[in-house]
Amino acid sequence: MASTASALQLQNVLYEKKGPIAYVTLDRPKVLNALSQAVFSELKAAFEDARDDSSVRGVVLTGSGDKAFAAGADIAEMSTSTGVQAEESTRHAQAVTELIENLGKPVIAAVNGFALGGGCELAMACTIRIASENAKFGQPEVKLGIMPGAGGTQRLPRLIGKGRALQLILTGEMINVQEAYRIGLVNEVVPLANLIPRAEAILNQINSHAPLGVKFSIDAVNKGLDGSVSEGLLIEASLFGICSGSEDKKEGTSAFLAKRAPQFQGR
Ligand code: CAA
Image (cartoon, rainbow, N blue to C red; front, side):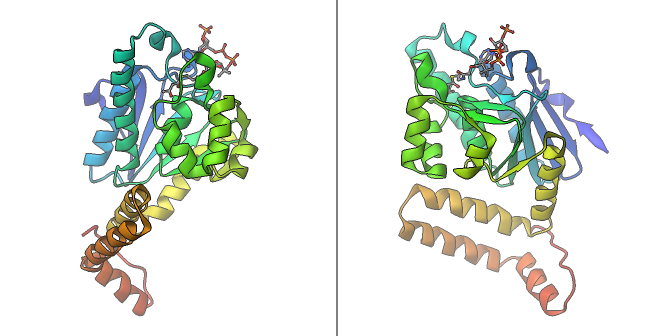
């Protein structure tokens, strides 16, 4: 049974929960789902709810309509901001990307069209990116006299390598989905009609596993990439130790040995 989180009072983002999956949909199709500050505030509220609701095991993030995931920050809003206001708003946007990246649950970006500037940056904060055949990606900020501000200079080189990231950021060129797939910016390309079902299938596969193993794997990859390999290995060993003391580890290993399906409880 679907439940809408009406208590959140969202105007620019649709937020819905169906069973173990929460759906966050950017909902300003007339402006290609441009990311205003209000959108970022509503994304924060929706993702905090998804994080705190133990019945939610994963999130699908997508855009309304069939043209755009998000065509970037709202240029009309941005055009009048001072430098000080822009620094503040970009920190706000970055905090939302960090919330998504470290939600403790998988977030699938289902990119259904343009993912430009802040839209590409939002997708990059997600755990996994899949895209429809009409999707297009880019970091066109230099064309507007600015630069990426919602994590693009950091997450793009980590995902696709420094050289390719700098080429995209400095040329501002838009790439099609096949090129995005080739360089590793998206994991899979599917027809638009299959985009949400495929995101759901990936989440269902992940959700069949122990929640702690999933959460700590995401943490180890994210935190490990922030430091040296040696520091990352220490984080991995510590989280491996916590997983190994869990009831789910007992269940997973006993189920394997008894040749039955495991029943994980998330503890
Ligand atoms: N902000 C505000 N409005 C936007 C927008 C944006 N980022 N992108 C599109 N729109 C609006 C257009 O102004 C237009 O509105 P009107 O109908 O009122 O004229 C409507 O959405 C439809 O857009 P287009 O007519 O331009 O559609 P198109 O199919 O011809 O072109 C597009 C599509 C190539 C994506 C083009 O809209 C475009 O280049 N958009 C801007 C992309 C961009 O530069 N994004 C980066 C923003 S900066 C940023 O994101 C900073 C950061 O790192 C956080």
